[in-house]
Picture 1 (spheres, rainbow, N blue to C red):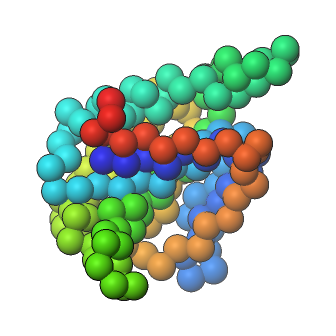
Picture 2 (picture 1 turned 30 degrees about the horizontal axis):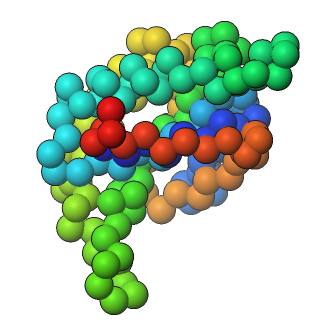
Length: 148
């Protein structure tokens, strides 16, 4: 499982011109799911995500969490995080989980995050989404379950 976490001051996602999710201060999280991912792996990733202290405190040190700043989450499923670009110029996506499994875990992640974070928004699984954001910093972190 991969999470690309971007600290934002504003982010939104729309499908066919309609906004489906929108946050101000918080994390825009792109979520990639592979064949071997499980709810247990998702739980570890969620715990790390929610506890991430990458907001600046009064001294300018990255020491504050989502909870400390009242931040929100915008969760976007993105199978392209598992692109394999080793051969040729057209990526292969064979490492991405199938739609049923990926959607199930994506919905699980959303539900679990809502238990801890008051403001959780999301995109629409499998849709052609347009994502806009103002990356704060910029500050971007890649979490890979293989590295936790």
